[in-house]
Image (cartoon, rainbow over all chains, first blue to last red; front, side, top):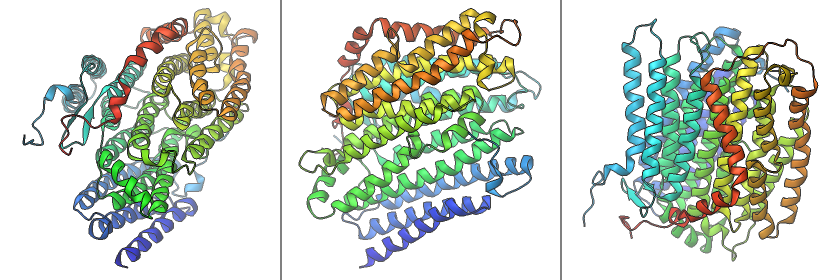
Length: 101
Length: 501
């Protein structure tokens, strides 16, 4: 019972994140939505490490790794966005369309 | 015998240790060099490090599989072969980058080289891991370095946009892979691939099969992004166009090879129970459909491309489809044919990108008509490009022909005739656009008759590419047999020194 509600919360967060990545126009919001998806994974891992079929600590350790990597990814994403903003002077992701074909 | 975490023979990790120490030392060295000083010395040292790592990797062959670091990392013939391919590709990319001048990378020259080193380190961790956590960390090390490499020309709008698209879609695909991994962990309580294999079998038979398929599906979506198969290929053309040509070559060859090794490890170790005949839910079918879709989409959209790098991007999507054929059919010559094709792909793709680099640099244009009349300007360059294109198209006496032939054998051997049919048909379609470039080179008149200057480093890459492409094509059986002698099975069995027996 406990596990289902945690999994449902994670699934909802993941879906909101995916929806946001696909529809948001603001580039910063897009990066936030990726973070939402990654945090959904963390909730899943922690829930499984407590209530999974084989509960153990590995899931929490995995979470530490994903949190660290997600931070690095956010840093790189923001850095690229700043470089892009300096050239394009807009943070609207749908304006980033100079390449077509 | 009690085993400690770091109680192992350090020599087995020599390639990784060489690369990681080179990356660390060179980044410090870059700080201490004068702002105006040339960074060529960093380039040469990183090339030397990659070559040294390659030598260590070759020396590692012939030993039984060996697991270290609490069974998370393994050295076996499978990982060593992929490491050699990855390191060879990186060495050629570095050689190709040597003539980049400072203006092109906007004084970020030092960074460029050690980011390449960290990227290749990520690739090596990916191909050697036997644990979801290390696999994920390796994948992210490769991806994060690639994001920066794509966007390294900070003042170039296209480069920025390419990096942005890559980081967003790469982040989404990582999230999908991780979400899948979290379900795998939930079902098995472990991140070790071998433990997962045993416990997934139990999970499948005790009513959790839907979760297993959900995890598999999420991971396939994520991997689809990483290896650029249709329908997850939308980032590829933009990223390939916006990045510098050597970086594009790196993404096309090294990242793709490493991602394929990762997919094979996860599919053939952790998800092996799903492939067993008693289950037969059609996981193979799913992979086959992905392969067929990428062949069709890649080759069809490439027909109307006018930008040379976008054309190569769609071509690489189609190639990803071809490479998926042996894995999805689990054919009889899966590993030798795959390794042969990846080698052929390495030589012909890097060679083609090297020619593309010198030609587009001289023409200051990436449209296909920069190739016009190349035959009259630099006949040898035109000849080399023709060899690479003929090989990419898969016509005889080149590596590409035999590579595709061996791939098709897998499909026919498993009686998947429709997949072989799709492969042959799309290959025929691909002749049109590959020969479009050859037509430009031989039958169009050039804008000027000036020969194209070829720096010796790029020339060396082109020569290696031509020798590799024709050599593999002349001696296909010898190469295939020696690849067949590699002990591939050892990559998928528990090593003798494993902690958990």
